Length: 314
Image (cartoon, rainbow, N blue to C red; front, top):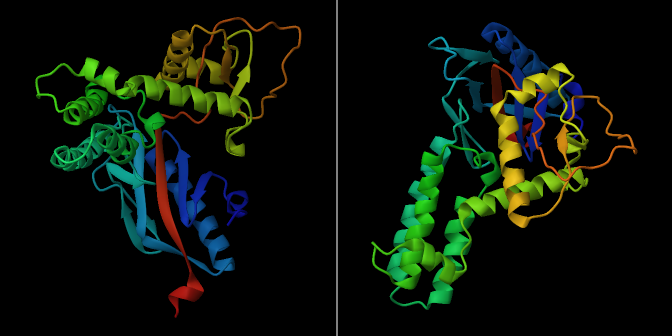
């Protein structure tokens, strides 16, 4: 399976037996054609390795701006199976929506955590404060912060729902009335704000990528430079993208909160060298943008499940 990406022209991501194939195009018909061609190559590779793609578990989602309309009934036909376009798909525990608002995912997390908070409230009568805090951190906050970097730039109205969960938890743990102001309670319990933790997490991810402590796929996402790249078409496109603002805001906020000097980094276009002119000095300013050479007006993603054909025949 490790050799599969070499046999596919489009972007292909793997986790265990799950495959995610993505392509981008301004035209829906061209987009469908790209995905179908990629599927044919993936199928040929899998058949050679005696693997079978489970089309019943295959999902299709089209990521687009809210202004772009999709014809009703748009779907892909793969091996006689019709794969309709879905407004949301679940990928490795994260619910992705076609506008990347991350609202449906956050709503799902909030609903799940409210049930856990009910459990915490019932246990509060019998357990000490330290144990209640441990339960919150390990069972509830861990779910709130799962893949938090993917929704760190979500709308404030969505993120406030997550903050409310921690406020409720702090009142339960301390045995305070529902109207009690939660900020002093969180300070008393040593609970950092979820916003600050998200900033720190995103900044940590970026620093790990820069220092080569991440998956090889992220090797050329960033480079250190004295100026923001705007001479290439990629740089011009990135400058107007919200994704650029996302990285800049969170990394700068965290660095500024530390009062530390750091490096100016920017995304590299594909194939661009990471070598820098040694004569360039590193200014004490941070400008961060996540790699997005593949930012698109309309893109689609198919998620597939692969099974061993020999096991299916038993």
